[in-house]
Image (tube, rainbow, N blue to C red):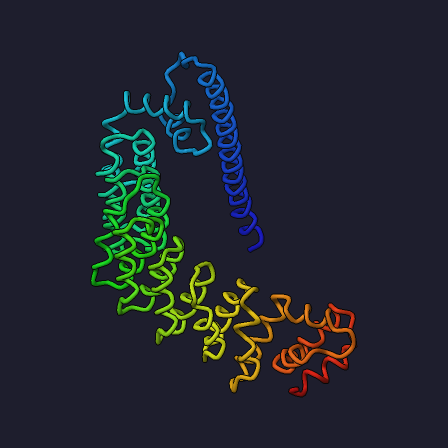
Length: 382
């Protein structure tokens, strides 16, 4: 039995050794080929950047590899794409249509046609976008964004409507468009899908300075979907207009908490007499809304004491504590304690009582005062 095992084992080991050797040789040859190609490309880059043209006919795959590489210098990529279109244009179009059946070749061909700004690029990219092949679509969306033209952006807007790919990724490409595209985005605000309306509002925010766009964003602030309302007030706030302030103030009373939070934060950079309305949110039932209100009030330290004195005795504990935090963070409490020659002023005592032991402890440490004494004041109201 052992003799038979040895008779079969030796040939098996020989086969395994041969396979290992073949694999090792394949890896070695691949690495050598890659290094050779990289060295050749570096030489070609230097030749082209000197204003000369390569005197040899370059392999198609090498040219495609260089064009697809974003690190390839623009003059080199331009020359290589011209060579590819001159000698392989028809084949590239066939591959971009998927006639070869290989995804990687289709993506490579689409990349070359995009970088070449070929007239066929947008129609072929649109066709690929509707293929249903998720990996192919993932490669096509950035190429459409790279083109940044009206026709390519129109394809992306259509993809946004149909949810052909993750809407956030499509919207990111549209938001980076170098060409203004508000005319493509405005129709999204009337779409029956609330997510489409949301992205339409979010993308139009960069154009909010135009009167027509601002008017549509104000209208979207009354949209039935809260995510659209929140996006509208956030977009309007970028321009600091009167309409933005009025819209944000109105949404402070929205029934949905995150809309109220967006409205409160929008008012942080907007002028107007909306301080009392924001301060009232210190008693909101949502922690996020209270936090947004505190951020906005802290951005206006000159108004903090005047607005928040009444809230130090508010029936709601969250409102009292929030008012005390704002008065601490805006330096009001430290100013009162620093001006005290001996006894702690009554207003400072009210702030400490409305706050917490922790607030009293940090105030004592900052001002070099007795921690225990301030904590005692925080435990009782004056």
